[in-house]
Image 1 (cartoon, helix red, strand yellow):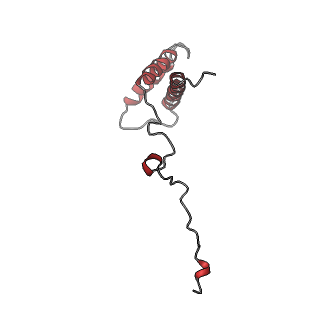
Image 2 (cartoon, helix red, strand yellow):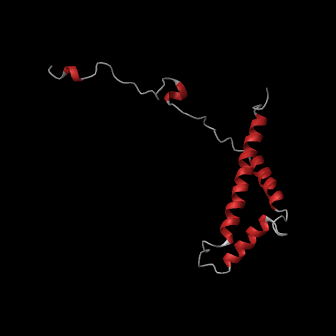
Image 3 (cartoon, rainbow, N blue to C red):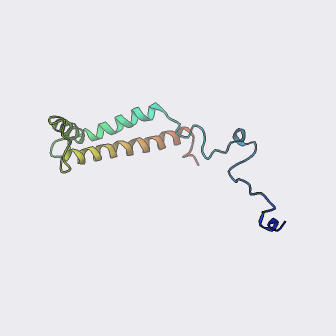
Length: 119
């Protein structure tokens, strides 16, 4: 009885637990939140390969420079590329462009199919 005043009279409820929602489970996202579509991957890859294959860097394309640097680095395979190698610049630039193209492709394609851009 002496410590009765220390015990809370009300039990704290878990705010993440909602009765009846999602079969008793609380989910922050839809089950299919990625909404993967292979059209986006295909068109995104083509949409990046086309502009990155234009010979704009001293008569060479970004894709060509990247693939040439892969071949150069594979010539001395057991040893990794040096930190000063051009391989890292082409790797980061090529993949950054690819991921941006895929991300904007996913936003545009899914936004259009779900009427997100309609007023």
